[in-house]
Structure formats: C-alpha cells, structure tokens
Length: 259
Image 1 (cartoon, rainbow, N blue to C red):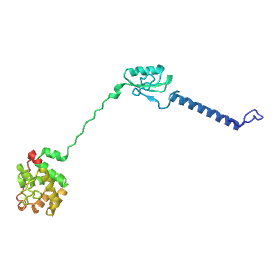
Image 2: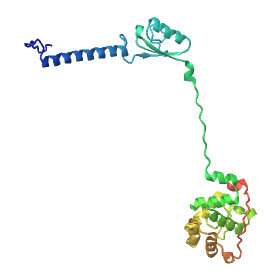
Image 3: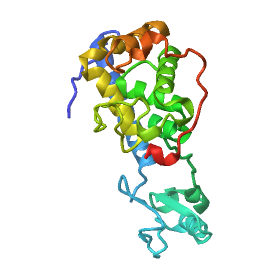
Image 4: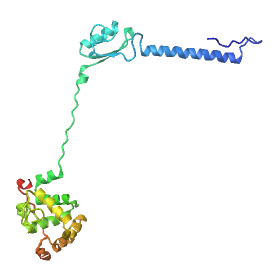
C-alpha cells in the first residue's frame, strides 16, 4: 500500500496534511497490535475457542480428562485424582484450569410440602348444625354472615329440633329432590341436602323473598318474616308464634350422615 508523499517545504517542515496521514497510520497500527495481544490472551495458541473439557469426557492426552500438559496439566491431574471436577481451557503453559470439589454437586435442597383443604372438607370434619347452615350459604352463593347463619340455625331447630337436626339427612324437611312432597323425604347425605335446599330457594318463585333476604344479608327479622309468609311450611310457623329467637346450641351429626 502506498501513501501520499509530500516534500518538505522551504522551512524544512512537513505540511499539515502529511502530519495527519502519519498520525492515522500510527494509531491504526497500535490498535491492530492491541487486538492481536488481547486475542492471544483470551484464547492461547493451540486451543480453539470453546474447547472445554472435564473429567467426564476423558479428552486429555493421557485419558485423565484434563486438557493440556506440562505443569498446568499435572496440577489439574493431581486435583482430579483427589476427586475434584477439573475444567481446563487452552493448552501448554498458558492453560487455565478450575478445580471444583465434588461435594459442591452433592448439596441437597429441601423444600416444604404444601397441602390444601377445601371448605367442604372442613365443614364435614366439624360436622355441626352451624357447619350445615354455612354449607347452604356456600351452595346458594349467599354471604356467610352471622345474620344469615343465625336465621338458618333457627329454621333448622323449628323443623327437626337442635339435637336431631340431621334427621333423615333432611334438616329443613325439604321436599325438593327428597322424594317426599310433604317434606318427609330423605337425602343420601347432608351435602346433597344442602345442595337441594339452595336449589329450592333459587328455583321456587314462592321463596323469592327468602332468597332476596339471604342474598342481601338482611336483618334476621326480615328474613324470618319472609320464611313465615312463604309456602315452605303449611303452618307458616303460626306467623312467628312457633318460632324461637333464643341461641341455638351446636350439635355434631354422625360422620356417616355427611357421606
């Protein structure tokens, strides 16, 4: 390659253009030399980029799995003989090796186990009349508020009594789906009874006021008045005269009743 040549002028100095050309040539040469040195340092001569070996591949000249020879290779082989995992890059005196103890790969991590229990399972396990009242709220999509549950407990007491509320697995003497139009039918278990109670409240238009009361978690007196006025009981609970507002004691039904 040739470069423009300028003769010195009368003052014996090179022109400004000549100084710029020489400066560019010197800088370019220095950059090229630096790049060559860096490349040699990163990938030593005789080793292609990415040539990495460990004890598993047995790629060393002596079958030890350690790449390289000389002092560096001997040191890596010594580490390998002690049960360490050795990774080597490069060959000859410039070889780089990393020795990792075998114990590092044997570290165990323990994790806590998790398990879940559904609301239905919890209510079954507890099994009281309050739990059944809550189950009706769940199946009906009603708020599980104290007002709603209190009304349901009082209603159950008026139908079957508190200490035998699971009689025939039909706590409210519901004729819907129980095979007994008069309310004297039975269900296979209390879970099915709760499903049918919720369904009856939603499907029978005669219970619309009861449904609205539960959905809005209305005051107990409002929901109870709707029950008395509905066709649920032919006696209409004597318009509330056969209805107690005293606290309802909790009783647990036999496990078999829950299915």
